[in-house]
Length: 181
Image (tube, rainbow, N blue to C red; front, top):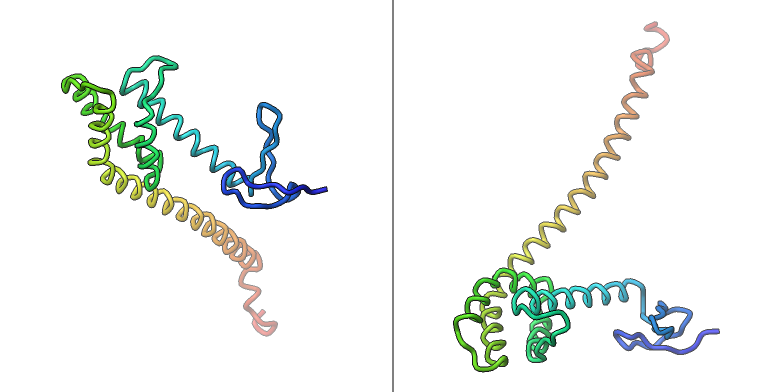
């Protein structure tokens, strides 16, 4: 018997028979509109965690468990309003040397000032990185389409080969009339 429930992501209303159910580690059931929506949500969450860990460990040299400044998380969330976490990660990766240089040599009086300065570096570079990322994604999509058409072409060519080989087996006799033989 179906019960009413709502999607954990988009808050759409539905019932337990239709929605995708996930049981968390505490044994509580959570419902999502579809498996695809849930998988996409989990993938985004993993990309965010990877980005935050990269910034904390590789750029700020924080120890495991050290708290990332909340202002950084807020600024990343603002960037994520338009940019994918992959783009933000690539931007931090490409700007790593510059960021580390300014952290060491600028002499920031507060962590807030340091984060603001770093985010200005990121904001000034992110559009270039975004354009490269978008171009790369479009190229990957073209490659996938090309592979699909190649598979279709190969299938078509195999069918043509089979027809040609069947015609060759019959030979010239197929074209000759009884009078010609």
